[in-house]
Amino acid sequence: LILVVDFGGQYTQLIARRIREAGVYCEIVPYTAAWEELRAKRPRGLVLSGGPASVYSEKAPQCDPRLLRGGVPVLGICYGMQLMAFLLKGSVRRGERREYGRVQVTVRRQEAIFKGLPREMPVWMSHGDLVEAPPPGFTVAATSEGTPVAAMFDEQRRLFGVQFHPEVQHTPFGKDILRNFLYDICSCKGDWTPASFIAGQIEEIRKIVGNGRVVGALSGGVDSTVAATLVHRAIGERLTCIFVDHGLLRKGEREEVEWTMRERLGVKLITVEAGERFLAKLSGVTDPEEKRKIIGHEFIRVFEEEASRLGELDFLLQGTLYPDVIESGTPTAAVIKSHHNVGGLPEDLKLRLLEPLRWLFKDEVRRVGLELGLPEEIIWRQPFPGPGLAVRVLGEVTPEKLAMVREADYILRTEIRRAGLEREIWQCFAVLLPVRSVGVMGDERTYAHPVVIRAVTSEDAMTADWARLPHDLLERIAGRIVGEVPGINRVLYDITSKPPGTIEWE
Ligand code: XMP
Image (cartoon, rainbow, N blue to C red):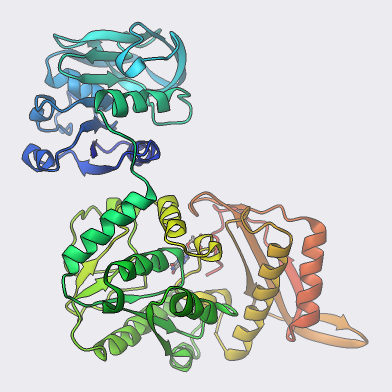
């Protein structure tokens, strides 16, 4: 285990990702964590992250200085190195100018974390302050034109600092530096894999749950499916999953989820048929936020009702991922308060949370899912919003309009898959507009709805670009939708990126 002490740097998550990519398990801890608490986790090494502050300012985040004296190897990155210098009585000052971007450094000591690396190498810098003189016991290990101490070592105490960012891609040898630290200095083996994670988690889940019973809401998405599969491996029949069919699902979705869970994985699954209930609540509602609220609310009610029929329960299974844990800042949330995954937590069920994926990033969840034997279709599933097709029927949701958008969406997805473009795009779907336009079909005048095709590429949904779909594919999709879906007579393609647009239309 490596602990990454977070000082609020923008790259902290990236540091954690890089360490895990090296096959070493790590966790991010806040800089306020007490040394006793960290030591109890028995880390093989510590990494001090970057951060926006100046070490000499009054409110500068500081860690317990015992971190540096505990005999555990430490790598300080950017602010982390400055803090190391500051706490150990070196000197840190404001640089004449901020150094930002690609910089050439000269390595003076090609050993320890720089073992096997070239003498001159490009690195990524982003700092205003700099270390002027390293603390007693340290030597300067690298320099650059604007940074007299670009890296410093105290090999005896196994303390290392780099002013630049080894975790970003613009530091081409960054991976090697981190690996040297992890493997050579901290003696990590690099054997943390999806298989070892699964084995460890199964043991952990059995320990936590004991003889208890677990209930989980299944959405059909990759996170909840992987979480359920993992828990099922650990406790079998004592896990029950509830799948709420709110009538706002895509074509074939319910059958797919039921088949995968029941037939393929043998998980106990209860489907609640609640379409009419949701539609009744949505009747006459046109405001997007109002629609979302109603659906979220109703979801909890349905889930609670169903769960209360199951008798005595102890745990609620959640597919929470590590980025959510880091962002919510509650590393050890125990009892349910609020919930963002399935649209709100059932507050009355006094259940404890079970979150077996809380240490994983999304790509790791996928790797774990594959290792668990889940089908590729589930692993690479597109994100689908909790409120489902309701936010893709603009304005009031009616059964007729749902049927239209569902069919158009199915044609779109089928054609994208046929064209082999599924993996290249982040998401594609159809949106039904609440207006009508005139058209002609055969010899008949039509007066019907337009449908919008939305297809985007993205890394993380924070930003997105419209996908450059081939024109002949768009033509085929448009032809099929207008020809096969009654009520639609026009197809539009959304060429707005995010920002300024969002991915969904509501
Ligand atoms: P926007 O529309 O904000 O969407 O650009 C970003 C991503 O989030 C998905 N999304 C949701 N996912 N519940 C979810 O689980 C929701 O209410 C929800 N709304 C949007 C959206 O599909 C896209 O991938």
